[in-house]
Length: 157
Image (tube, rainbow, N blue to C red; front, side, top):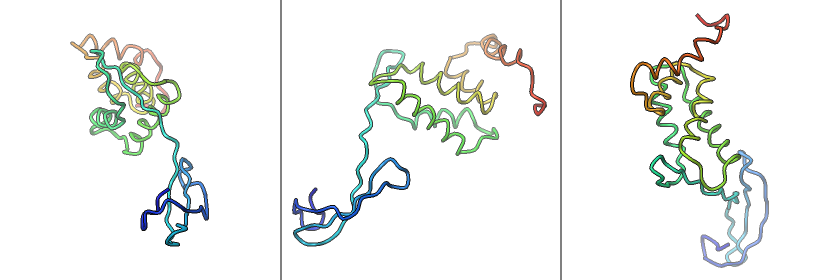
């Protein structure tokens, strides 16, 4: 590791500890050339996931796109920013656990819908209408039918 001050490539590690998030290691180093101290972080390099779109174009996985779609589906719904972040994190985690290298976009959409359905049915239907490209009211009814056949819990109006 080159010293950020004198550019000497000779240092020693003084202290190592896990960072607060637990996903990196914080190391305090001392340059053996100029004796100044600096901090470095070591992280696991996440593998690059490519998304296979409907037209077979491949592009890098971008969680921000999921968040943007969720924000639109959850507009004016009682869903907090932290709940949206939780869905994005959950989907991202599922992808990294279950997929290697490439994943089809429809699989990601299904993951998002699975997570969203647990939080808000209206936002779920909004997301589904765009994701599944509903053409008419019958597509909405087909999507709603399983939910309509499920008994309401006592807390639902």
